[in-house]
Image (tube, rainbow, N blue to C red; front, side, top):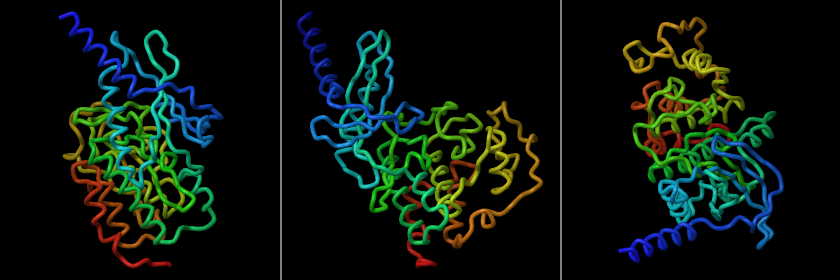
Length: 320
């Protein structure tokens, strides 16, 4: 019996070592970003001399070491990379760093791209994208999201800073490492999802699922047209006010009864504007697509797969 237990623990240890390697092969250069899940560094692979993005995360340890749920997430990330999806940043390696008393420093090693969508938008601040460029970028963002959702992963922090752009203008989603595989009883903490791209259910601190990502994509597509954030609130209540100003205040019957912190009657929308006035040069199909993503009720939002079937992606470019 003792031999069997020892053998089981040895196999478990070997499994952990197979999944998590040492980080000494990478040399940190400088910080390139801070996400909801940890710092991101530009680093050099000492073996190949190539630049990589090194994401540093802290993992709480149990008496047995790395928690099994973390190991499952690592295994899932490695499994996803086998597909080499063109709109998902490549995960090159997973390493461990310093071990502290109750936590382990881990590094997720991704391919490095020089630009994110936020930087790309800044470069284009004086010249709007062509319709066909926006359509292609929107399609690639949705393709990446649909791939993650089909593998039961919610990104949870979609924003221009977490969408990378290759030198050829292709889109790759990033910063989804160790994002939780989803169920229907999760709640986002305040550090998850940048305020401007948060879905109403997040602002109201309700349970959530994949529709939170769809809301974020709708906001981002609108931003590709206007070159500025669609809803740039400075607090949860202000963010909801800005959303209702453009999309309209939901019916009281739609207001979640489980939320007690933000009251329905605290919103009085006096200066309502139309999305078409906020987002210039928006085609009718583009308007319909965005509105199908920005519905207050998450159950009525398009899923990524359905959004990709929208007429917006098959209409002729309006300004080639």
